[in-house]
Image (tube, rainbow, N blue to C red):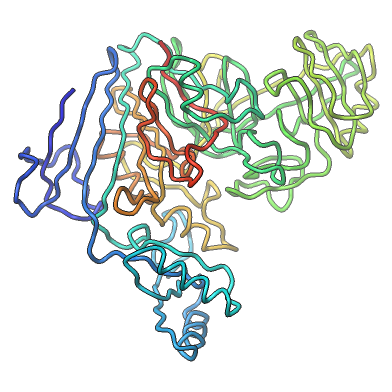
Length: 513
């Protein structure tokens, strides 16, 4: 284990030095006015290195405040500010200038009206309660160091560097409790698999109102099987295998059911509740859009959903009918009540609306139905069964060594809700990132956040700059926030940002012995 402290003369994370810039090693107790970067490095196995980086310090200029409202125009912000002044408060208006890099609109994203500057969170929360009692809604207590303005930190960054050629063991995705609706903490997943290290994976459904909790909100491929359909057009991480290099690509998927009578019908989804499409990006008439729309649930009352044993023992209950298939695709039963058993060596096609009518005609007992899956990466057919796995994510952060954040294209910037991009992409949050260096080395990185005085997190752009400084030429954002977690052997090295502790997640990437 090596523990060193490095000197960097630049206070803002936006100015993180690249590898080509000189960093002077100095003693930890230097009186120099520049930042001290503490790096603790440990070799975990041949080809695997873990590094913990702690940089920066609490800024005397940071404080807690209350966000009143995000407005699209300055006039709206001024009108609210006048009301607050008349009530005896001293509000300020912050212009939010940064838009998504691929946003075609120009000008400010919007304006934030804020009240109060406090050194402790409790005082800001008291003001929030006071304002709430006056009828104001949508209020938030926030720490200024997590906003998009410049700050001195601090930041805690964990880095797993894996050379697939030297690490002759497995880098694999894993489902929580080995089934789709089986969320589990990363510590639990890593522990029961004796993992050398692990990191949380892709986006997933959290609550019942948005679908099946634990359903991957985007593509998932494990053990050569398609577990969840893609949010078409979103970036994903393709893990390396004996016949395939690691890759970050824009991934889409399609599934079709072909009956023995010649009828063909699109399969809308895999291993999820019919009618609810988390983060959208589907096909077949989803409303209000078939484009990616992150953290939004699109709907479709007429869907054909394929359930495999990866979902567990039983399908989702609800309306419609189900065709039970054996391993050869023979229809062995047509069920009038969804929510039945999934054969361990077969599958179930569940239909609602028009899809239920299709099953009535083309999935009678004795018929055969073949379900065909196709995955495309960067618009080219991909032999997904040859990959070690695919993890959903987005947006992309780096492409060919350059910062390239396609937040609008991947549904992280919403024209009808500009505040969403500010809250998700511009504000600093805990982040989980994946990257690939020019030589194929994998980088798995976490940035702790929502912990004033410990680590403030990072924005999309700051995340991109961090990955570039670590040597990545391709990088993307994975699920973050309360999901951000990394384990080294049996130890959780990240700081949970949820008040309840480590969050149960849907999937993870594990380095297995």
